[in-house]
Length: 379
Ligand SMILES: C[S@@+](CC[C@H](N)C(=O)[O-])C[C@H]1O[C@@H](n2cnc3c(N)ncnc32)[C@H](O)[C@@H]1O
Image (cartoon, rainbow, N blue to C red; front, side):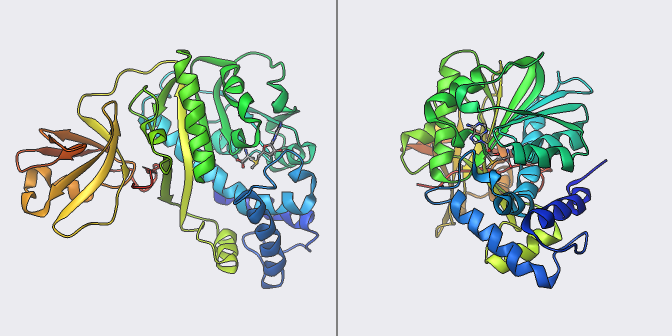
């Protein structure tokens, strides 16, 4: 099976060509090219955070920005999309996906998301983007396995043949006009039993914008949120202007990403942070008393407090140290993103209280290093 590390020699080769660097080692950056590569990554990074001046469809017509994207963002998107795929699978939403799925990558750029899904699942993939240069890299990096179609998605979806089992929209929704985003998702030709995987930057503005799109689509009655949400109600994080919902988990960054992170003073090689969402046509209601851990503030003296989210809302849940007993011991192991069963908990103020008689059971704990761990800023 092809993995991210197998894609690195081609990524480095294409990035060097775009950045005008001479050929170098296949698995890492040579000391002589590290500074120039880091400068290009830094220029793009600055333009994609803060005021996001480079978050638009003409950015990748610039060869230096496209080369920097291949080096720095491409591997991160690949790993994030495979993590959201694992999240979708653990939510039971991939059961009806055929053995050779048809995948559509919307706002694909050089198609890290399409290749992440092809490498994990096989099948076929079509990439849509406004940038001819980015799509040309998608074809080169995939050896022609990813089909491409140039389209301005701000004008809506182009006409497409047939339906798709998986649609992925990674770091692209927030580059489209706000009024067009929900309509674009709503128009997707999704096959019965299919799923839409969305990934957005972990910034507050883009994370909250994704939740607005979620709410609009769920209101239509045509879509359901399969993960990380355990509720089909309006997202409770939007009730507070400082909350949103992001995943944060460690990953195995390729050596050249570790080199660039050290050069740039960034920590993207240690952990991936992003806003995930899996949409489907319908979901079964979640089991009673199951909650998603969405925030883990620092421990306080004499007690521990978490934020959890379910159909009952997004609430704090606390346990006094003196109430720690074996039946609630899993409370100490909980991390952001975990699914947890909270039995026999009492309402206390605006939250929940775990007592000596409560049951706390960590569900799905075994895959925590691989699966996304949604978090929200504790308020
Ligand atoms: C940040 S890149 C994301 C690329 C890739 N999906 C990823 O996650 O790594 C955003 C992509 O959206 C594309 N894009 C922005 N506005 C667009 C539009 N109006 N129509 C089509 N593509 C657009 C850009 O060309 C760019 O390739």
